[in-house]
Image (cartoon, rainbow, N blue to C red; front, side, top):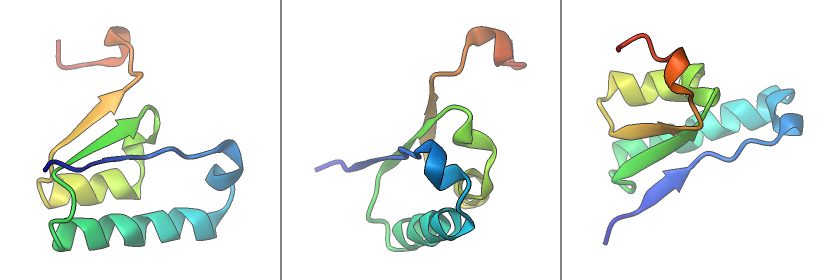
Length: 74
């Protein structure tokens, strides 16, 4: 069974460092315990510490809501 973790961060949580650090700890736990097969990030959250953790540990993830104009790879 494949589990997918979806970041849904409310505007109030973006202003709350406790919520952000709590989410980062949750992401670390899921990466190290292999409890999630794939992560889906809601744009523009892809640039935060959690995304850097995913990149560092080469965890699979996708970004939703990013327009093609914002993608420098093409």
